[in-house]
Image 1 (tube, rainbow, N blue to C red):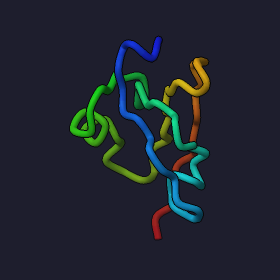
Image 2 (image 1 turned 180 degrees about the vertical axis):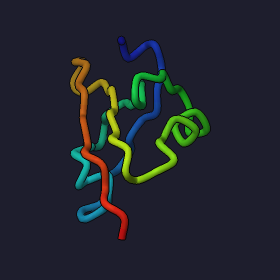
Image 3 (image 1 turned 90 degrees about the vertical axis):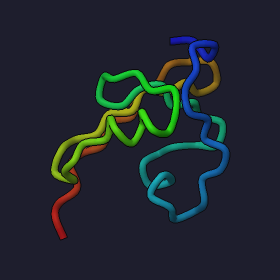
Length: 77
């Protein structure tokens, strides 16, 4: 995936935020969630697993390289 193919730009990642804990950095471009291409926030939220017990995989462009971030399921509270 190239940056030209679109995605969701991460503008800021506050310290302590869930995105920070997930390993996202300002400047990342999210292009996929669990193998499904996303180019806007509606697609992003539709692609998220319905359960916190499902794993999450994000495909993103960081510094012109494609990177995959994999997150284990979050246990129920």
